[in-house]
Image 1 (cartoon, rainbow, N blue to C red):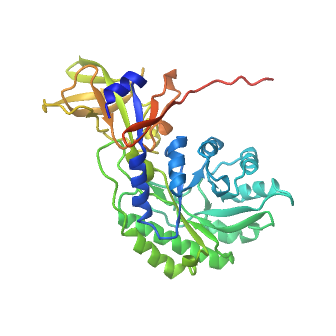
Image 2 (cartoon, rainbow, N blue to C red):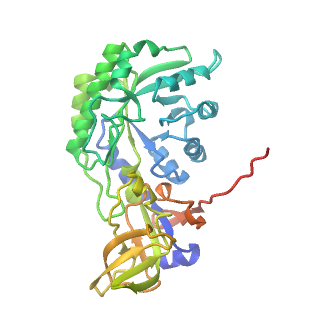
Image 3 (spheres, rainbow, N blue to C red):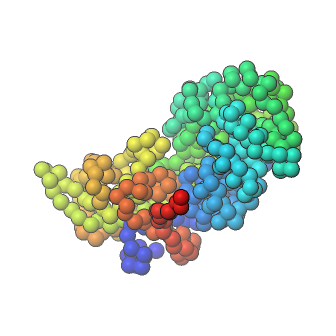
Length: 408
């Protein structure tokens, strides 16, 4: 694609998502999972409706953690009854609205949340399927961000579930059909992932037996890692399939017949490779012996959540769109345009000699790009997002923050 022409038409910076690469990522991950398993797309990675639509069309179900993400599924034309609603802080209004829209599957994170859900339903209400999210005794400490085995807002401690069995009362409207574990995220090592899933399968089998809850559905989470904002290919997880099937055969009877259904989740692995952030060099300067390249994109467009640990603070790869014949690298600090010293992509970068108006790009940011950035800071415009397929622009859109007046 001619990125100079795209800049002329749409401006700079630009997020570009390639549906062809998205399809490749989906096929690669599906081939790494048990044949009959369900794959949820976690919208937190990238809620763009056309990204969501492509993954739903391929066969994913949607996993959402807000009404905003649920609206993206609606806009994408997804099956709302197949949506799994997750997250540790669902209030009664949110639950009620989700049910009214058509959500029938919830991951429940506490006894209070279960009681709240039950209180919203009457004898005329539709049946709601619930999976209980577990915080196991032992977690996955080798993940990029581990979420279990320690005190956490996520899920119910394994010990509490066993101790307070009598609280898990089922009604005609709320059916507890299984369990949910998500040990950690952004795991690049297949050995660590295998260990995580095996542990989850064992915990779920044990709790099902002790609680007397027949398993109809289990969600083993995800954690499938992918390079972020640096050059690199997706890890090869194809050996997982046999490992997972063997573990399920040993601990979960009848899973091959769909009782229980087995599900996994992914956001990052599915979308990361499909996206790039393309920006422009708007200034170059020297200060006290240091060289600076200033781009028209910063932490309001990418990486703002790095300080929260949700995404890694890495030395981003800033790559020239047009390959440079002058290969002499220069040592620079690559920064954004925001009025804060925290707005930087690389404090000690090494890039080919760049000039004003050169276009550069950051690869592997189809996941946790705009959705993980400080989009409200300094009230700057968001980049236009382009959806491309087979080299053609299929869709262009731009996010806006709008203030809504609340009448008294």
